[in-house]
Amino acid sequence: TGCLYFGGELGYTFENAKADSNLVVGGINLSGQLKRNGYGRAALRGGYLLTPATMGYLALGGNWGKYTLN
Image 1 (cartoon, rainbow, N blue to C red):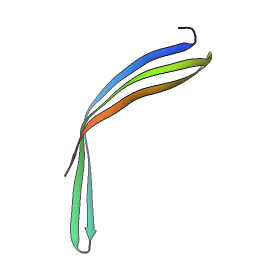
Image 2 (cartoon, one colour):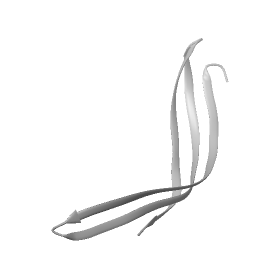
Image 3 (cartoon, rainbow, N blue to C red):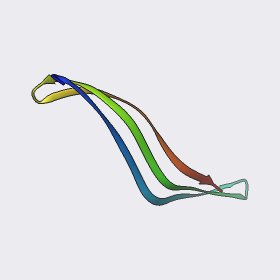
């Protein structure tokens, strides 16, 4: 509407990412694994057209994912 912009976004990533770590402290082996299965985002956006080629905006939303630490 005029120079104002309103919108939203939804996103989801189907992934199976993992990170492994091994640490030896005083002869004791410590190991762990962090896994993430899926990652999503939802947000509302509002902005203003500053010039014909530039827009400033704010996004209000959240991210979520399923994490497992072993």
